[in-house]
Amino acid sequence: MNRTYEIMFIVRPDVEEAELDKLIEGFSANVTNGGGEVKSVEKMGRRRLAYTVRKFNDGFYILLNVAAAGSLITEIERRLRVSEQVIKFITVRMDEEEKRLAKVKAIRDTKVKRSAQPIAAPVQAAAATDPEEEKKPVAAAPVAEAPAETVSTAV
Image (cartoon, rainbow, N blue to C red; front, side):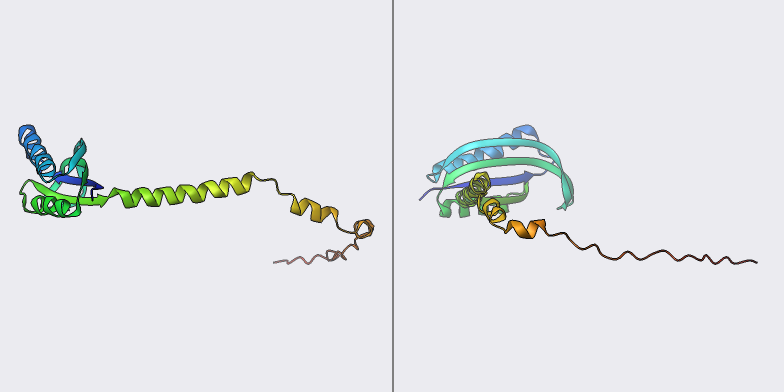
């Protein structure tokens, strides 16, 4: 069963453009030879790393969107791990992420529907109160007066 995955990996900054293209083609060929499908390849360019990884402060970011079986993804991850040019990688299963996002969207839609409905019950409850209670005057609370004397200190 093919699932959708995102594979992001960071390549050493000293790798030339031709070598980078060859590396991407190699991983794409591994996916297609294993029965998977490469949906898209996105070169995000050279970026600064948040922290030093293998004594590098920046690297080339590449994002692959892949539809493949889990065993093929395991093999791709193994190849990423042993490749000297790749300094870091992560694989995310996107169908689980899409399910989670769809669930969050459904919850938001139900909240919007609830807030769009008119709130009639509190208005009716306010109208049902006894009108005689509303006519009764409210007793004022006693106000404390300020002290009449002021004390001055002389030096």
